[in-house]
Length: 308
Image 1: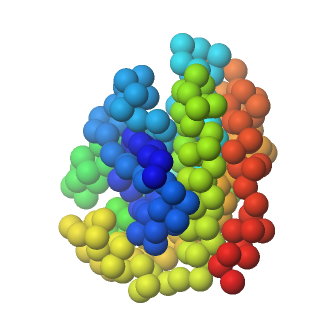
Image 2: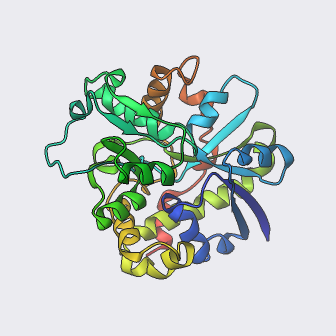
């Protein structure tokens, strides 16, 4: 049995296809054992790649993008999220919400886990023709801290993950006015990457891993949150089932878990957003970031046929 060690930036619902593949024995069926560890702080994934404690890192594409043509040579080979599963929460419901409603307001954008919540939100705001500088963003603190402050009266909106957003709705302390899986379009939110000098060595294991992950995604198209309840309870026993299931249902109904293949056009859009935020010196090209050889080697038709 081959082994693949993954160091992840979080233990999050949006990584569910990986957990589902493991529970369903899809990795084992391909002669692979997958061991995943969530790092806190998340930057530990880079240390794990350097030390060899991890073969693969799981996290935002913006990290390899910032290192492109820089001090770390990283290869991105697949994704687990085809969309950005975040939400904008305000105090009151707004059926006709528009990004221009935030002009002159204060938005809390957690950043202790990375810059993507702010950066992608700013990108959506620009795409709507609104200048993000017309909005005050508070950044750099954790989601729990910002949610606590928001519920105590700070700011007019907060960017958060879908589970937290559903918890807030259930408590009556906030309302989801923009679910990014509905309003945000496509984008490689969470991806898998490794050191370039280990890519060839790992390729066989990566093919097995991605084949199982794609099969897991196909299986998820025909299940309900009720079917997934035991898996959800196993991974997040401290989270109330109702908001957890509601957030999972949002992702099941979206394109979030649609494919392991990273879309070049969606990647270009994300890189443009990062460049507009000055997070990269220039927008990296798709070919500078992603090697499609692993995913190209998969027979998606074959995976689908195995489910029938």
